[in-house]
Length: 335
Image 1 (spheres, rainbow, N blue to C red):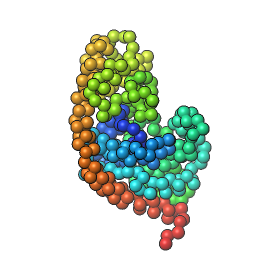
Image 2: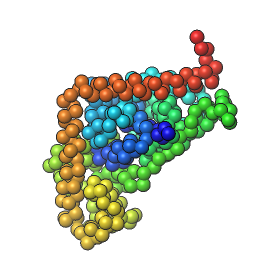
Image 3: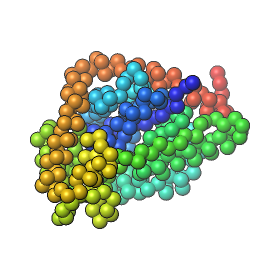
Image 4: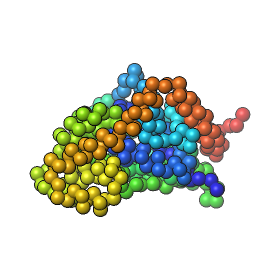
């Protein structure tokens, strides 16, 4: 019996941080034993905002190394680079031609990012949810691991697939599979160290807001020591008046591999002066093996290039027939 297929990816912008690991990659590591995983570096998405061409390729290798260092097995999972497969861009154009403009205008993340960029907003920034739909639907996955903030984008993907199926397929013969969201309850949304109401992000101008997976132990300790807290003693989950407390406890829970109940009991009488050193030590030790493997991988580009070449071949074997099927359905000539 075939394993259920999943697909996901991360933009090649900046260093990977703790939110990427706990919110996404660690979930993929757990899923790969009983799922067919297609995991990519989203470099086409990375150029929807101003970028440095000198670092784009390097970031691609960094993320590939991070995937593997965190536990993704290239022999089990397919790791590939988005821009290396022209099927992504070609299917995105086809989707552009069936996607109503008002569907994109209502996307919350576009509105937020456009507000920051002002007059520099590109068409690509508005259109990237359509490319994201192409990324997903090319591989006809059964599920897509997403955080709560990405649910709207997956709903758009599902709407585009349904629209294509309705216009060019039939009820008993849909052209594309409509995927389901896979939302992890624990760790799905790791928040900023400087504001517990905002998601930890590479785009945050403050380096203090996040812990990068490559941060040295002293840097990690310093960032946690400076993390925003509150004046209350006794730590607790799920108090809406204490978002930073909930976030830091959640990070500790995930990195120490304990249950929520166990952490709540352990920390209920602690002050920040006792808890922050504990969190720092736990974070440093959890990231140590990842950092050691990452450094070894980054020193062997031949291996990484081979992994990505193999991944391209395996991904294209799925993507190309899917694109051909869509092109045939919408009426392109077959020569």
